[in-house]
Length: 402
Image: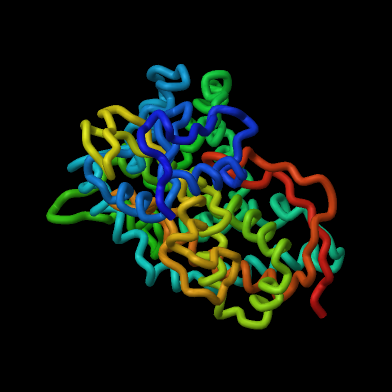
């Protein structure tokens, strides 16, 4: 697929500021057919697999979300300060140092040792609505599952999940364009999560265990340790980011499988395809539909001059279904696929990706085995199909498995 664009002013335009904009729209698909990039109301959108892959690794780009509060009228204050110091937005040596110290806590061995508990949790949640043959999937499964998985990881009582989820949901208002209007609620939620994190840190210092928080508290390298502020920031980001990602991705996964019932049946028959199912869903229907970067300097890329300060949205959903990279991009959990970009890439590849992959690869095969022939059963409420997306409400009916 060759680009028909000869100069930047001929590039397609996508109005990503329009509340009705969708990354899955025909406008985006047509733009991808015409060009590897499009102009948008917030800089550039990169639409094809090869270019997204290259730019995610390009050191001339920095994390693009750091200025989100400022660009939406929030100048200073507790949220802006926390946001600027999270691993998500740090650069250079600060980023390398924090990541080095955090990395051991995300040990695959630690997560693998928790999979039996994840499975027991998923069964418990399904038991509560299984015989009814219907449920509101987000509230009865996806949200409590995501929150209780985090409680298991953090080594706290699972009964705490509603408290954590409530604070996380209110803090997530910071990712919307109404951040300024909701800033008091956001600050209140952040203060609650700070206090919660401080309690955990203090307790693990006095009573260390074999859990994620203890590993963070004890983490050191060459005599370097995380400060209390760095520990607090990391735990708040884990609760905030980890809960939303799993909750929304599970809803998007089920919705995708409802449209492909043969694949749901296959997953029920072959639970070993759970990991492949997670990867395939995140390729075609990710909760993070684009990854944002910012040009740190002027540079040329494939004949396009990109100025310092340009915002660049890497459309990972469009890249994941790019026919140049995936000639048969339909949904198939048995197919060999190139890596998707739903967890970002390069230096800012999501540190918690193994957690999300593990808990979802446990949940999906179990759901497929127990909830046969799932279908929509009521009014669906969803977030916009741009930025971070997912379902607010997903009522379903199903045939209970014998």
